[in-house]
Length: 91
Image (cartoon, rainbow, N blue to C red; front, side):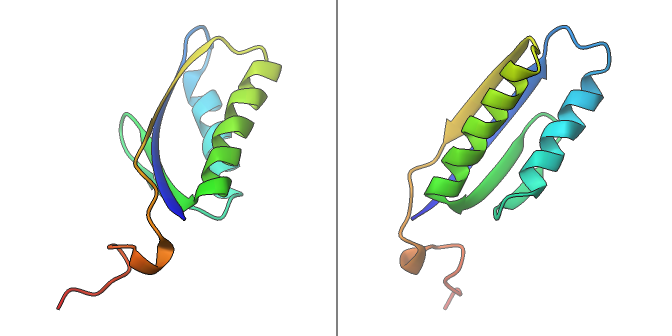
């Protein structure tokens, strides 16, 4: 199954918020997902297990780092990768 997740990470008390965001984007880049970085959020798309593992890893890592943060995640319903509309050419 293929899942799309959009997440917004807001560091609440970081002295340099960009550092926290760049750290998380580097983490995302290490996973086998499609990534779309936007101004206020990032979308990832890939195997459902990989997407959920990534979300958990991000949450756990920032907790271990003792960051104070807000982490908002939106999920789209999973689709069968054989019926994925993104991969089916338009006729």
